[in-house]
Every structure is written in structure tokens, then in C-alpha cells.
Length: 132
Image: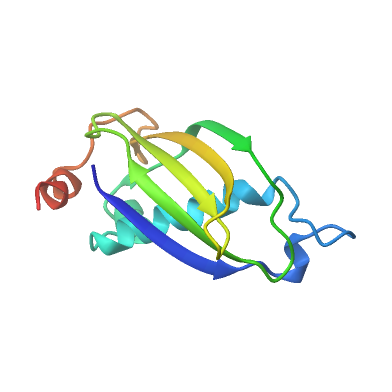
């Protein structure tokens, strides 16, 4: 299925006193990967929400291999696991600039109608973009 890679540099504020990235920041890194994956399809979270759909995370799993450090350039590889229905699932790999694997992760998000708070099927405009 589709994948996207996005690179960025670790900021000082994302690290602890030893210069190691705090584990909780990895969830934000995954979000960055997901947002950029959607953006390459021409879809933004803002547009999705303006169209009445939100996409909360309902499952998050991270398998840490090594620590990222201050000023490292990281690459997040975001991969759509399967065609979305009411949920959308992504696998991720986070690498250093030298392609050393730091973490593997998985998230599942649900399409939710903002007005009702109930699950809905993946919007057709997203499914249409995935056919390309």
C-alpha cells in the first residue's frame, strides 16, 4: 500500500537532560508522519474536520529499538496497512540519517462524525485519492 517518508531534526526541547528523546514524543512524531502522508494525498486534518469528520487515535503501539538524540535527523516512514473502512491503520518505521532503525510503531484511528460522536465510514474523497 501507499507509503510516505518525512524527515526532521530533533529539537532540544524534545530531549531529557541526557540529550535523549523523551519516549512520549514518539507519538507526536507518528502524528507528523500521518499528517504529511495525508498531505501528499491533498488532504488535511483541518479540511477533514471542516467537512465534519475527526480522526482520533484508538490504538497506539511503539516498539523502541534505540534512542534518538538531540540534533539527530530522523525519517519517519508511514505506511497505510490496508484500505480504510471505519478505521484507518498505519505502520511506521523511524530511522536515523544513516538508516539505523530506532522504532517500529502501529496506530489505528477511527473516522468519527463530529456532530454525533459516532463512527462513520471513511469519506469517499479519501477513498478516491487512494485509487490513484
